[in-house]
Every structure is written in structure tokens, then in C-alpha cells.
Image (tube, rainbow, N blue to C red; front, side, top):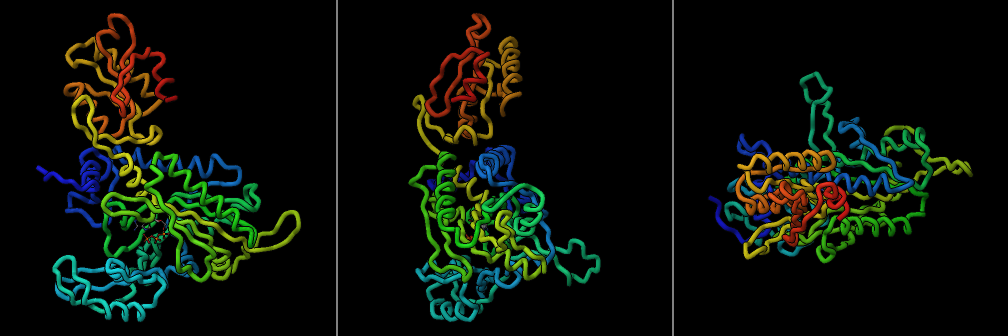
Length: 461
Ligand code: ATP
């Protein structure tokens, strides 16, 4: 039996496993660090978050279109983007137990800001000066190897049949590159005019040195990105609007505003004009990044134009003027938002004098919208009617049937996975035809509702 814990994040992680939201990747082989699988309820929640994002960023807008580009790309893409050279984290190893550490994060813990743009030499200097204050988390020693820049790109031999391994293709270090590669295709094939945006949800892989904090820092994850193409220098107003819209989307997920925070980047990369992150206040871990909003000038398209030799200038259809568009990017980690949503929804309260765990998820995110119970399992007429109601609801929304254990237990099970409503078929339903009881997850209140009104009632509250 698992020990009781007061740590909220540990409780959430345990609920994720217990209730089929998230499993450790390759668990039966002992698990692989930084890889997670989303279980039956997890995939529903994940899809609901992605659908809400897609609706907001594609369907609800006039000037955004969607894309789903191939994960593998010509290796030159990652040279053009700077990933083969500059996409690295500073790595050092404990000489005693070989535990790897991410030097910038360790320095951060002792109050020293190690800029991600610092050279290996600069970092080594700061690390040498301060490493007496850093201890290995595993063995407690403080004897470390010199810092080396470790590239985070993961390689594959897809399409290379030589066995030599000298023509690697890369798994995407970020999902958005496919948008730059298809920018010209999109302009040539669908009727978009600047300013316009392209949205994509895709996988990213990073050889993170020390994956940690559950879904927060993993080696395989999904990013939901938008790239908004604007005329040069017409970036400021659009950037502010995008920032406001992204903030509002988090509130639409039911996340409490006090758990969100903006953080502006202090040291911008040389080509960027501005960069802000949205942070969420994770239990135990504190405020950390869920999304980056970047004003990237014309860097990305200029790089791809240089490396591919293809003219990526935009020609204004009215004036004939040619220019490389500037790009405003939003890049969100879907797994981090999943964890933020769960953290915000996780509640321990009391209902009818009994303590319970409940996920107060927004209705549109809940994996199961409604559960149907016959009051008693051994009364065929109740079970039959409940099955009928279940079939009716299942055509319209995610719905579960449960006749296992007493009603209280069934409510608790649904509370723990965040189901907003439970329907119970009882003797009144059968004898007097007076509808079913509909129980509200958050208040525990029940009301009688006619069967024919159920769908409307659930979908509209
Ligand atoms: P961090 O500083 O936390 O490593 P980053 O600034 O490198 O993040 P970006 O490259 O801007 O992140 O990626 C955009 C988003 O992708 C981040 O805001 C985050 O939500 C998500 N993300 C990045 N790295 C990871 C990771 N290892 N695991 C899970 N999500 C990630």
C-alpha cells in the first residue's frame, strides 16, 4: 500500500496512474525516464485540450489555417534553424556516481543566472567558481566533470540504408519548423493574404539531460504552435493582441487567473524583438513556463531562404511590393497544459459529511461527460432502463455505465475523473415515469429531470 502524502503534486501523479490518465512509458520493462503514455481518460482530456486550442486558433478565426506536417524533415532544416549547432544544454557529470546534471538549472538553484546563450567556456568559468556549493542529488559528492554543451536533437536513420549512421535525420526538436517549410505552399494554394496565421499541433523530441517533474520536462511531447505572418515592422499591435488572446484561452479552460503569470525574457536571442512566457503555478514545482510567445522578426524565413535557395519573399497582391514577412509565434506544451489543468481542477473537499477527491474540470474538458447508474444492480427493470438511457446519451457525448458497488462509491469514482454529471435510474423512473436524478459533481445536488430533457440539460449547463 502506498504511503499517505501531503504533497499535492504527488497526489495528482498517483491519481493519474490510479485512474488511467497517465502511465510511465514502457512500464513493464521498468519504465523509461522522460516518457509517458496517456491512458484512456488521459487521452480524452488531452484531446479535449487540443480541440479547444484548435477551435480557438483555427476555426474561430478568419485568417488562420491549420497544418499537419511530417515529423521527419530534410536534415538541412535543422541546420537552417540553428538546432544542429546551438540547441544544447550544459551538461556535467558527478565523478563519483556518474549522475548527469544540467548545469544552468543547478546554478539557478543557488541563485546564479546562467544565460542559455552563454558559451561553453563562460559557463565552465561560472561553474568552476561555484561548484563547491553544488552537491550531487544522488550521492551528495561535489566533484564534477567540466561542462560540455550537449545537443538535444535526437537522431534516426530513417531512409539511410548504409548502416554507417553518417547520414542522420533528426526527430523534430520543435514542431513549428513544418510551418516555415510550408509557408510558400500555403500562400500558393489557399487564399490567404498577409497578415495570416498557420496553426499546428505536432510532436517534439528533446534529449533532455535530466527529465523531471512528471509531464513537465519530458523527452517526447506535443507542442501546439501558431505562426502569424505580418508585414515588416507591423508586429507590435498584433503581438499585444496575440498575448491577450492566449491569456484568455487559459481562463476559458477554467484555470484560475491567480495561478497564471507573465514573464518577459531578459536576454533576447539576437534576432528576436520581444519574448514573453506564460507561467502556471504548479503545485510543489511553483511558477514555470507553459507557453512561449515570441516576436521573431524575419529570422526563420530568411534562414530557410538562404539554406534552401528558394525565394520566400511575399509579393503584395495589390502593390507588387516584395518582402520577407515577420513572424509572431506562440508555442505551447500540450503536456504542461494538461498538468496545469489537472492541478487547477484537483480538489479535496467534503460532501455529505464524507471527504472526497474531485477533479473540478471545465465541462468541455472532462473525459466523461455523464455516467449512468441503475440504483440497484440486481433489479433487471432498473438495469434495462439505465442501459436504454446510457445508449441514448452515448450517441451524443462521452458516457459511462456503472452498476458496480454502492451508489456512493460510483459517485466517488466519477468525481475522481471529473465527470460533471451522474444520472441514476431508480424506482420512480420505472413506476411513475418521473424521470431520473441528475447529480451535479461540484455541489452534489440532485434534481429530477425528464429523460427526454437530459441531453439538452447536460449540454447546456
Ligand atoms: P524550457 O525553458 O522549459 O526548457 P523552452 O523555452 O526550451 O522550455 P520552447 O522551446 O519555447 O521551450 O518550447 C515551447 C513549449 O514547449 C514550452 O513553453 C513548453 O511548454 C514545451 N516544452 C519545451 N520543452 C519541454 C519538455 N522537455 N517537456 C515538456 N514540454 C516542453
